Length: 184
Image (cartoon, rainbow, N blue to C red):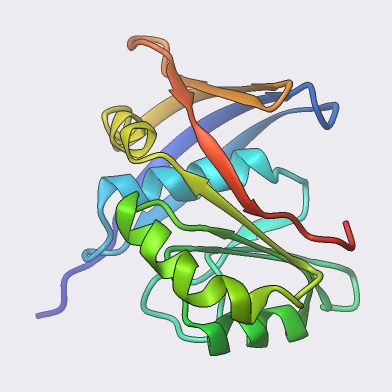
């Protein structure tokens, strides 16, 4: 018998002072049986960092050729493709060809650094690619906020990011820009 996804109900309040985006989102997040709390919380963080009324979650880790998050325009053209982890160069190129903007969030620390060393040169010409590494300590701290029902607040100001849950301490998220898109 196949294992079913765990459903998480999330009330996400975003105050992004850098983009002047302030909104509350009621999200239903399906956590695939093979997905860790760390990865699920990085998905929520990626949502908060790129929040928009049209941003939606993809169908999940078991779906090939689809991002973790994306935003499409009214003609179904992909404006933003957001993917977590360490895709290979072919996947990155394919995403960059399909979307106006591609954002990758590798989040495994030293493993992400090794991955980036291997693909950075091959991806240097992709003008619509942004790669942002999330520090492993931040990922682990975010995972402590995971629950089946969550109220999260995300504050973004001057490039700094804090995620809080009312009954727990704030998590300051450390990130490093590995590659910035040239066309944004």
